[in-house]
Length: 165
Image (tube, rainbow, N blue to C red; front, side, top):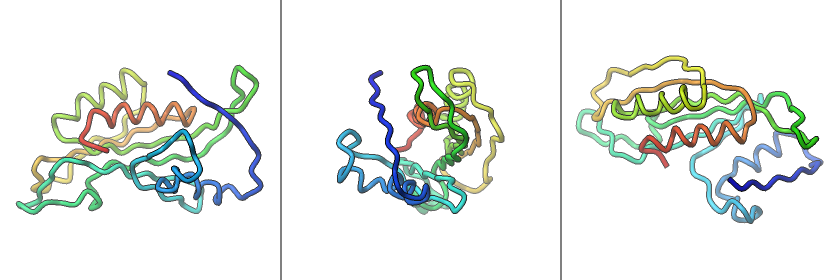
């Protein structure tokens, strides 16, 4: 995998920087490498970035289609933590990352296998709201701490096994 890295000092408060970084719609205006990002992100007062990745399949509740923004999608929280020196003498941004995967029954086992066996994530709780959704949705909260970029890639590999953007 090719990777581009750079580092600069930004004369702005961390929250202001985070707000630029999570404004996904504006990336094409300033970032020549990332032309499009999916999801919706918010920044909490404590610096935790929450990204919502919408489901793309059709979910019905008592025969009525549920909008992906109505609590049926995957949420991922990124909490900045310490920085570690990497082998090249630079710093890596670490984070505690907590995805809460939204999955159909057919997606549960593949996602859990990917995240636990391939990437060694700690699995929290597998749960279901016991509503009349069709198909039934299950959520699984997981957590891992490490290099934020690497963890985001691992979460993406789990999302790729679901009907998510």
